[in-house]
Amino acid sequence: QGNTGDEQVKQLIIILQTNLSMICFKQKKHKMSRDVASKALEVDNQNVKALYRRAVASRAMGDVDAARADLKEAYKLDPANTAVKKELIAIKKSLEDMKKKEKARLQKAFSSKSGSLLYSDKEAEEKRKLEEKKEQERRDAEALKKRKQEWEDECVRRMSSEPPEEAISYEDWDKAMKKKDEDEEKA
Image (cartoon, rainbow, N blue to C red; front, side, top):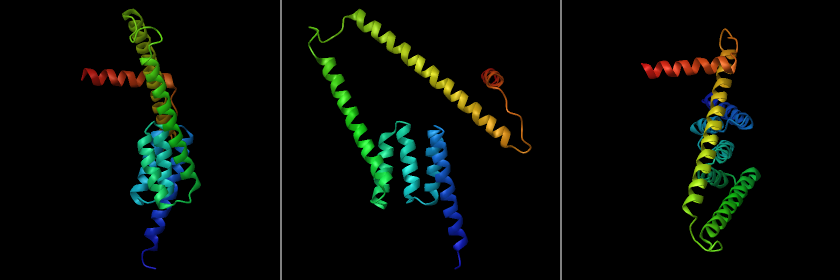
């Protein structure tokens, strides 16, 4: 029974990391979920549960190709795993839907119903400005969401440190981070 301790430790690490990956996913921390599952795969690169967790997180982040690759690998290792099968089917369906939407969009763009293949310059410029505005609003919302996530992580770090520190309000944290960024730019 020589090295059973090492194997037990590896199995425990994999179990903890795959469970942590699931928790992060449920908290909508998809990147962290993917990274934790990847850590489990460093211990055992053929762990079906870790491959599945990383695939689900990758898909939630929009990386369908990585998700599909992990799911195919998991399916090779365990063809009877129903969760893997369901996720593979869901990815296939979403890819088909994306192709249909793209095809419809291209047909609409090149249809001659309006009598012209191109928009007038004014219409095209208005549409471009509207799209730019929507994209900027999306980026701003994404940046705010990211900053709030960083603040949450900082609060968790503070409360779990030894000795525990008091959590900080988002406004105070945001002011401190902006000041820090300004100081770094000046330096």
